[in-house]
Amino acid sequence: MEVQVLQGAQWTSLGFVAMDKYIRDYALPLASDIRENESLTLRFIKHGGGLSHLDHIGIGQSTLSSLQPQTELFYKLQEKDNDVIEVFESGIEVLLTDIDISQNIDFSGRIEPEVIGKAPFIYPKENKGIRMHSGSEFYVYELNSLLGQNPVDGQIEGLDASPYLFKEYDIPGSGHPRGYTYGWVMNDDNYLYAALDFTPDNTMDGDKDYASVYIDTPIGVKQFKVSENQKVWGSPAFTYTNKVNYEHKIYEFKIPLTEIFGADFSASDQDGVNSSIKIAFDAYGTAMPLNRIDPDVAYGSKTNEYLVVYQASSSTNETAGIYGQFFTYDGMPSGSTLELYPDGSDYPAGPKVAYNSIEDEFLVVWSRYDGTTDRVEGIRLDSSGNVIGSVTYLDEAQAAMSDYIEMESREFARWLTVRTTTPMQSFGEEAVKTATSF
Image 1 (tube, helix red, strand yellow):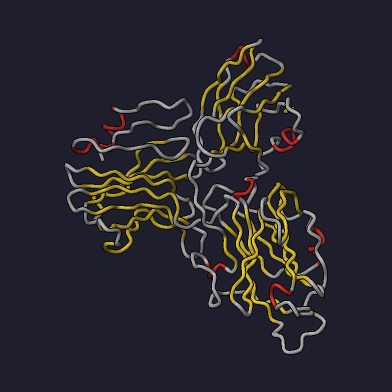
Image 2: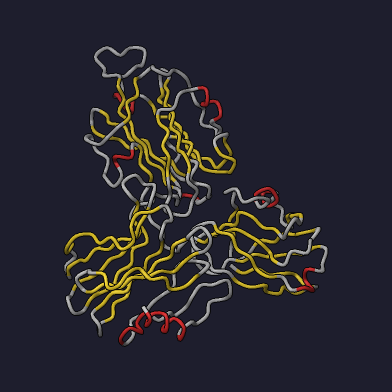
């Protein structure tokens, strides 16, 4: 992300920051002559990566105004509250007035990877990673137990008076906010109505976003999917609800009961019909579960095996660690899973792995936020997966991961680039010294 300031008729770069997928705080220094202005026009431009979002912009107690017709800029960037706006390559412009003597421009934002995972959140969660079938876990809704209608209109506040079918706490591994997902189901004589308040998804991603209802019918499990381009069974919306204070995705479904029980079914005449509906859901909005994500792989030429490293959540989905698994040349797992950094609430992320053919060793590195800054840490493994030494702190970096390459001897850990608060820069000598020491 680049920040520019308008000086006269020219845009001047204030600097670059490298962002990862998590909303983090950043600061760029302001020269004294710039701070003397009573107002500043700033432009934020995305360079590379996937979708990018800003959550907050400010200089001390200055006043933020929008220079673009989208009034949402003014409201969404006032506070760091997960109410984000998307930033494009063309940039967004804002006006800051009543500038105080603060030395920094402060802002919060994120940039997703260009390639992201596709796994949705599943409800009930016992179905995670399993293709839905009649033997899957389902919630049970008794037909006519909650009579009513939910018009598919992008508003679900009227459902608050009705009991939830489920309420699940989700921890995304995609950089989206943690939050609850709420599900409701009701029916009238002709339709089954369902709704999801998917609070973890605070980004608008077009047809990438979707949600589904799965119902175990007499002829098998049926999927009723809703997205921006698939609205036969309902519709999505990006809106505010009373569950959280930021804009996010909701989904509404309106499914004919004849799709569940057959063409001759009538809710008022249930003779011979099992009125228990087995129902499940999924939801994806580039918000995805914290599970096995961010994989990287290196080939060990001496053993003819591959080491795959990844970030994975615990079974409770509340903590994460860094893990590895060896695979044979034909793709079969070799040995047991390696725990490289144990499950913890500090969420180590973005693992990378490199192989040193001279020493027949692997180097695995990752970033970990310790509550103050991002730390780059690493560990060495022999070709059997045995740890050499211990987890070693390498350096601080604003945005997680640097790339490593194979080099002679222990210099294979040399940085090609390091993401810092300045533009991408070669690191080289200091990194080699660090790697050699560990």
